[in-house]
Image 1 (spheres, rainbow, N blue to C red):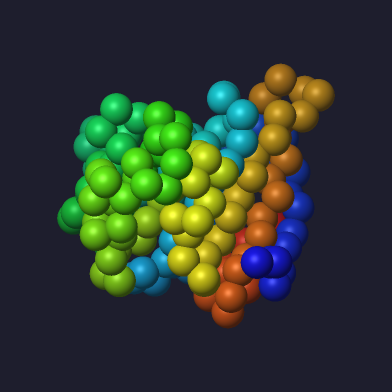
Image 2 (spheres, helix red, strand yellow; image 1 turned 135 degrees about the vertical axis):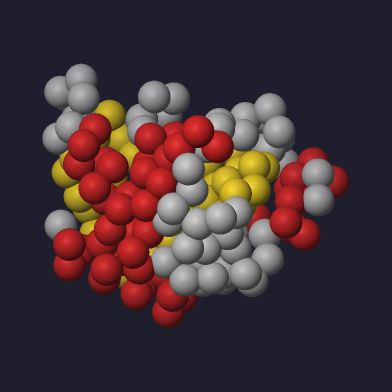
Length: 161
């Protein structure tokens, strides 16, 4: 499936990655699915943390879900299912974890390493690929929207850039 909208954003320091997460959080609604891709250390967890904190999840509750696959967060503006697919090899393995049951219409899903199992994404979603730049703390974010909801989220991020 091809994206219906895209924008490339330059993030020259971690504070800009956090600001992008805050802008995105302000536009999120129940059921939104955010898939994050990029190399190790590209900023996926920083962006996930910024989104969760902006949604009102206490920072002390936010953990990297690498070993648990999914961490649910409640108590913020929206419930969040924060997943990390780094250790998942394929869709069948992901299915066996019960992941698809956890990603429901009431929670925002933030899925790191979506490129490992791209078929886990629904028809309407936002994909953000973070790439290292030449400057050590600088990143480029390729933001792609799939379906109408993904298009709306791209527009929200582009408007605030």
